[in-house]
Amino acid sequence: MAKVKKKIKSIKIDLDKCNGCRACEVACSAFHAKPKYSSNNPARSRIRLIRDPLRDVYLPVYAGEYTKAECSGRDKYVMDGKEYNECDFCRASCPSRDLFKEPDSGLPLKCDMCEDDPPLEKPLCVQWCLNDALVYEEREEEVEEEVKPEDVEIGLTSMVDKFGLQKVMDTVARMSKKE
Image 1 (cartoon, rainbow, N blue to C red):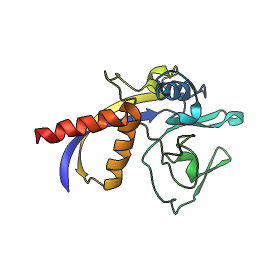
Image 2 (spheres, rainbow, N blue to C red; image 1 turned 45 degrees about the horizontal axis):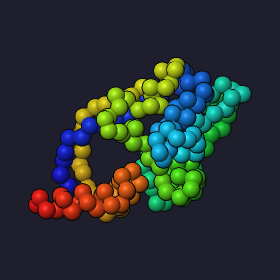
Image 3 (tube, rainbow, N blue to C red; image 1 turned 60 degrees about the vertical axis):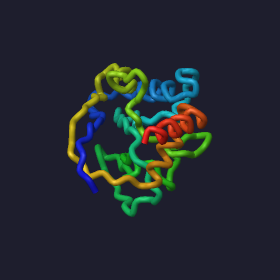
């Protein structure tokens, strides 16, 4: 495995500032609608709000990596007298829950930081957060990179969804002629 420098994008979450308005979910689901901004379905959002409105606790969680297996830990956490399951804070799409899965196809969702052409300055959830509970951060890190076949398949599926099969095939054919 080779070490490469990568730009790491993340969203820092300040729980003390989140008021549970869900603007982040609405903006994300509209951005990822087909065609873009044509509908609003929070089930398609890559960020979800875990909430306990009676205690005024709101926790935005954005989608992370897909995992094929359930985790082995089912730890419980108690905060302000309320018990939370470890899954409440997990960013993964996994077989044991429907969180971060496309509602129609069941495919896993992952936050893409609203990648677009032209690129956005920061993800829409951060732009629409009126209380600044979500803060976009970038940093460079040296990481070991291993390409797994399933990663390539997930990436291709995403590209086909975004650009269409014919455009992806044409691009691959054009790229292979250059080599």
